[in-house]
Amino acid sequence: MTVFVFYCIHDVMKAEKAFKDSGIPIDIIPVPRQVSSDCGMAVSLEEEYKIRAQDILVEHNIEIKGVYKRLSSNEWVIDT
Amino acid sequence: MVDVSTDNIYMDNAATSYPKPGEVIDAVCHHLSTLSSNPGRSAHRLSLEASRALFDARQTVADFFGASDSRDVVFTLNVTEALNLAIYGILRKGDHVVTTSMEHNSVMRPLRHLESEGIIELSVVHSFPDGSVDIDGIAKRVKQRKTRLLVVNHASNVTGTIADIKAISRVKGEALLLVDAAQTAGCLPIDLKEMGIDLLAFTGHKALLGPQGTGGLVINTTRECILPLKRGGTGSNSEFEQQPDFLPDRLESGTANGCGIAGLARGIEVIQTMGIDNIRMHEKKLIEIMQEGLKEIKGIRIYGPMDAERQVAVISINIEGISPSDVGYALDRSFNICVRTGLHCAPSAHRTIGSFPQGTVRFSMGIYNTEDDVEKAIDALTWIAEH
Ligand SMILES: Cc1ncc(COP(=O)(O)O)c(C=O)c1O
Image (cartoon, rainbow over all chains, first blue to last red; front, top):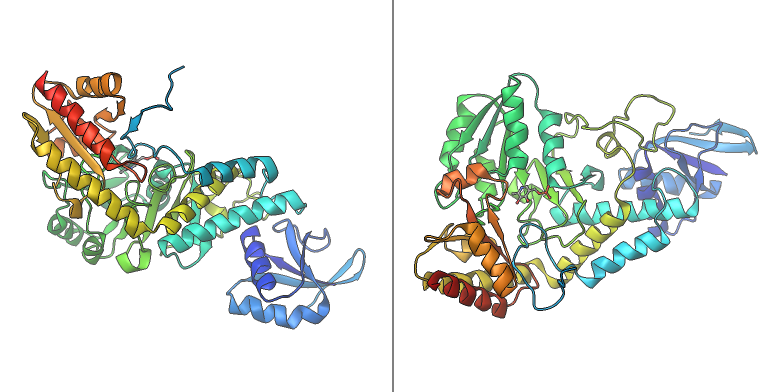
C-alpha cells in the first residue's frame, strides 16, 4: 500500500476529488503514527496507481508532503 | 409571540435577507442532521463528510468570485470579521491607509482604532452627497504617500450607490485594494481578477441568501502577508505548538460554522440557478418603480443617485417634519412594512449625504420582494406624509 501525505486537509480533499474524477480508487485514512501527524488524514492507494496519481497531483497543482510505502503493519518507509 | 409569517412586507434585506430559500434551510438541516461532525479533525466517515462539505463550499465561493484557488477563501463569521482580519492582519506600524467617507463602521472603527493607537495614518476621502466615490480624490491620496491599503465598499448600505471598483483599482498604485462587498455579493457580479480586487470581504446572510454567522475573506493576491486574528486548533500540524503557515488553516482556527457554511454554499447555488443578471434586473425594476413613486410624495427627500443603473436595491428617504424612527414605527405597526431607520452603523456616510444625526428611513429589497410590495410601501409613505 502507498500513502500520500499532504500539508493540510484542504489538499487531501482536493486530491480526493481529483483522484475520483480520474477513476483512481483511493481511501482516506488516518495518518499512520509512524509517518507524520501533519494533518491527521492521508490518501492511501494501491502501488500500481502511484505514478499516475502523482501526475494528477502535479497537474492539479496539489503539493504533496511525502509518499510512504507500507512494509508491514507498523513499518513504513519513504517512497519517492 | 409576534406572528411574522402573515402579510409582512420585508424591506430590510440590506440588514439580513429574508425569507431564506427553502433550499438553504434544507441544506442547513441536512448538515445538522446527517453530517454535523467535526471537519478536518478525524478520518472517520462522518468527519470526512463534514470535511468534504466544507471543501465543496469553499470551491463554490471561490468559483463564484473568480478566485484562482479555493484555499484563498477564508471563512469568517461575517463581513465584519473578514474586514478586521484583513485590516489587522495586513497593517503595520507606519502604514498609510486610504478609505472613503461612505464606509460602514465595520471598516471605520478598526481603522480609527489603529489610527488612535498611532499605528497607521488614515486618509478618509470625502465621497459626493449622492454617495459616489471621489476616485480622483483617492488617486491623489495614494500618490502622495506610499499607501499600504485602500478600503472601499462596493455599494453603500445607506444609499445603495455602487462604486466603480475597476476604476478605483486602476488608481490604487501600490496599495492593496480591500473591497467590502456586504451589499453586493449575491446581487451584482463580482470577479476578483476582472475588477482588480486584492481582497474581498463578504457576508453570507444578506444577498447571498445564507444564514447568519457566515462570511469570508477571499484573497486574490498577497497570500503571505496576512496575520491571523485568532490562533488555535486547525486539525493540521498538530505536532507543533505554532500556527501553520498555509492557507486556509493559517487564518481559520477553531471549528467552523459547518451547517451555516453548507447553507451559504446552497444560497450561492440558488443565485447561480436564478442567474445573477436576472436578480439584478428584478431589483433594478423595483428600484425604478420605487423611485418613480417616491418622487410624487410631498415633503419627501430621497438620497442616493436616483438611478437604478448606479445603485443596488437600497433607498434612503426622509419625510419632512417626521423623524425617521417615527416613520419606521408607523410603517411597521400600521402597514406591516419592515424597514431600518437611523444611522445604519455608518455615521460617516450619513454625514456625507447630510442626514446626520437623525439618519434616514431605509428600504432595501431582495429577490422575494414584488412590485406589489413596492407599491404598498409607496402608498404607506404617502399616507404617512399626509397625516
Ligand atoms: C457595507 C457594509 N459593511 C459591513 C456590514 C456588516 O455586516 P455584518 O454584520 O454581516 O458583518 C454591513 C451590514 O450591516 C454593510 O452594509
